[in-house]
Length: 377
Ligand code: ACO
Image (cartoon, rainbow, N blue to C red; front, side):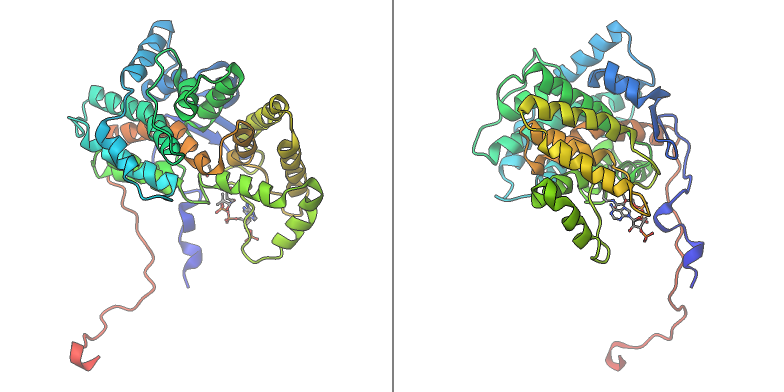
């Protein structure tokens, strides 16, 4: 067969030019518009990164005020979208609710197909501003609580925690969320971003592209892995059980340890390095570093294997969020809250330099088979 001739999973296939993000997988480097992820995570707010990704440069003070104001002005979920969330059957998966509500945002935009530069920026800001409100409204409603309105005093990350819990977060929690949002904001042609670009390349609208991206992110091989990580840690339960648990699991055919491995990074994911610090710090603040310690031990074991595996971004975000008191089902939605700006930046880039994305496939069936009438089959 011609298996070797196809680029299975499009691995290493360069499909387009981009100016947004660069990953150097062999040495674990990640840049947004040329800026190292370490600098951005330690020194920038999410609002600065939103401006960077949508405008291609870091904002000065006036521009930062402008983008912060734009984000605040775009807050306020339309009633129709809240009603969609309220109407979700009990037990719906939060990512399914987010995907449906993201699609509903298009119905409440007077100009969903405005593809002028201003129109694209407005739609991107609107989705960045409203994704936290969707996730938080769903979070509260499934707990029997009413959604709360955004708090105009708070920045994007702190406001997200406020929307979830209905009270102002402490400075540490707000900063940790800010860092997590920055780290997850962008990652070149990953599966969900590529999905968004494929949809955008048909010159469909930005809402359709982002809705598709949410669906792609949900999968456990992509953004869904962070929920899998905490479930794994909870299932293992105790440090003493790590080794026997892993030994048993790795006997299973096709077993995948969530939060490990990456298509592009062949060493530590730089985002995991930052999140590891926050996992430890948040654990210390909350009075237990158990989940951090267990994660650290698993990391050591996986690195020591004959075929080493390294943690990706989802590994230490899980114990960080858990220590922040957040339940597993919201981890992938948090990823989407952060990544929506990266998706929007790619939709804009795709449509600015567009060519329809339409790959080819290696067909293995027969052709020109004699047609058999239904009665003779
Ligand atoms: N656990 C166990 N084995 C693994 C893992 C893992 N997490 N990741 C890779 N491998 C092994 C595979 O079994 C395979 O082994 P083989 O060569 O003996 O058959 C080898 O490593 C290569 O794996 P592929 O699936 O071909 O690598 P690919 O680049 O396609 O996969 C992926 C990348 C999907 C992320 C994979 O590492 C994985 O499934 N990880 C677990 C899920 C996860 O954490 N996803 C989040 C990724 S980051 C993100 O999307 C935000």
